[in-house]
Length: 141
Image 1: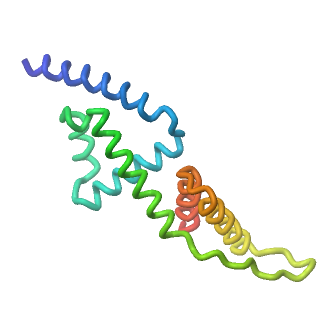
Image 2 (image 1 turned 120 degrees about the vertical axis):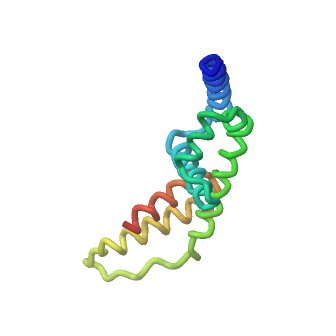
Image 3 (image 1 turned 60 degrees about the vertical axis):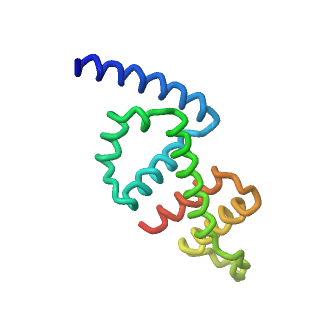
């Protein structure tokens, strides 16, 4: 009985995962990864450990429902966009450089951040938000 129930759940999960793939077919791999990490971070901030969330995905039909997963995906995507917006700094004028002087590494990185920020401000695209978020994340290391 338990084995049959487990097989039924696995069949259901595969069907719902395939349905979710069709719902997310326009999303890039980088965006999907960033959103998945944000979903896990959000769950952890709410008191749900990653292992516990994975167990729920592997046992609860509601958690595997494609529509429910899409709602979580959209929530994670929204959180990423809000983080990127909050991280965006006011546009500033690049520093004046004397001819023949090269920029320091930190000045180049700051310039890269400004250009990513400007691109996000102009486009409002999630891909630009993810690029800015990842650049900030690697800059903190």
